[in-house]
Amino acid sequence: GDSVTQMEGPVTLSEEAFLTINCTYTATGYPSLFWYVQYPGEGLQLLLKATKADDKGSNKGFEATYRKETTSFHLEKGSVQVSDSAVYFCALSDREDSSYKLIFGSGTRLLVRP
Amino acid sequence: EAGVVQSPRYKIIEKKQPVAFWCNPISGHNTLYWYRQNLGQGPELLIRYENEEAVDDSQLPKDRFSAERLKGVDSTLKIQPAELGDSAVYLCASSFFAGELFFGEGSRLTVL
Image 1 (tube, chains in turn cyan, red):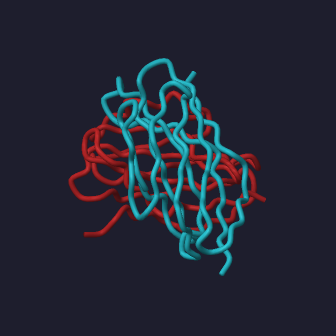
Image 2 (tube, each protein chain N blue to C red; image 1 turned 120 degrees about the vertical axis):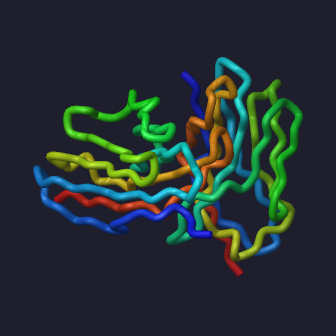
């Protein structure tokens, strides 16, 4: 079945460092891909998404490109801030479904130090 | 506008006791989801409602879990009896048709 694999955390960076969180997926169809973020004490929030190959999702300085050839959707940010400390989840949804049935990765915790 | 509201935020019970979680989705959202998130893992879908109809409950352990969404608005997820392995965060989410999912803060269950 469909699945998502993320790099294990925690990822610890200094402020203004470059961030990459790897995500690869397995899917039989043509899924939509998502990154969700969970800040401490809050619910999951959609960070960005891409619905077809070569699409780039972006939000709040974060970017991810839908790479069909490598089945990847890596999350990047050029300069992280302390406020970016959170848990990041990669997810996919089978576009054939009538609504978003999300399959999540296990999450990657990011800790940004001042 | 209010987001997805869940209660209680935390619940501690002894095994074999019953427990119930409540969710009020965003007004107008016809699709409601219950997810379970075990420690260190991503959320896993338990059940999905389209209005008051459960359209996907294949991952719901039906021997002890039940859910309802009366009148197609708020929803209740029940566990009876609870087992040690049920300790997790239970997340509710809602969406408008095939749109973005909005999650509540979750209900953290600890079974002793």
